[in-house]
Length: 344
Ligand code: XUL
Ligand code: MN
Picture 1 (cartoon, helix red, strand yellow):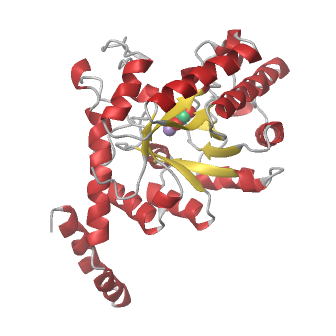
Picture 2 (cartoon, rainbow, N blue to C red):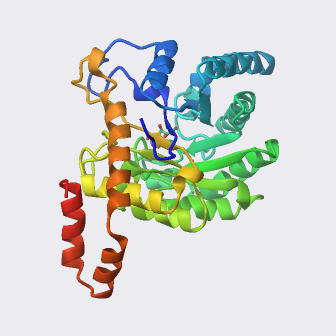
């Protein structure tokens, strides 16, 4: 498949058992080896990792064991001709992180988070990937009065500084999300992520990752969130997916809810030569009803849709668009885009 210069990735959590808060798994677990084969088979280039995807059970392991297991994972990736796009610390499942990690009121919980983040960085180094994605899952509140939001923001800054100081080669992309699991998250948008990055000890090593669904949940347009980061050379990752309005984080196949919105994301990426800068990451989940043997179509469909939209965007008549902009004939411009999306 001609990938128009793009490289693609997904994470092991994107092939999942379909459990939701109201029901148990509906598909059998797929082991990591099979997920790796699927990644390769579907034409993807890289795997996204949480720290414990790469080294399961890392909380109970010492530094030498963690390094050794991460090296073994690197070897498996090499054997498949694949690489790790990023490693993200999973700071939301351990009992110590019930009330947040870096922003927890309990100093012991914050200390756990700092240690866990270091382990994540060590794993990244062994995977040949000094790139961390930081989704701040529980850094927020269910109850506004539960934490001091100013102190919490300062604690987030201190935590990012500590990570940057721990590894001088580390780069961090903050992935904002406005809610879920928390009612209100402290870093809900790209603006918040970049403002935090700008105040760290090394702003050049902090960027952002835009997830389509997270932007929609914040009431924002994902392509504009991407554009804002691109304008400052800070778009270091994307999690493409889709989202049907303001409800739980659906992680639907890219473009499956709003094709026009997907088109605009592809267009802003392509026009700004994202293929030279980053990987096209997906963060999509199969619909719960999907039978196990058919539960990789969300991945292949999202990748195919992205490439189809690249072709549509590149085929648009840019001179005509300039003319319509100059004439302020946005109705005709609207029709031009809609016609292209309907096949010309
Ligand atoms: C959560 C989410 C995460 C991050 C990685 O909504 O998107 O999977 O992308 O930690
Ligand atoms: Mn994501």
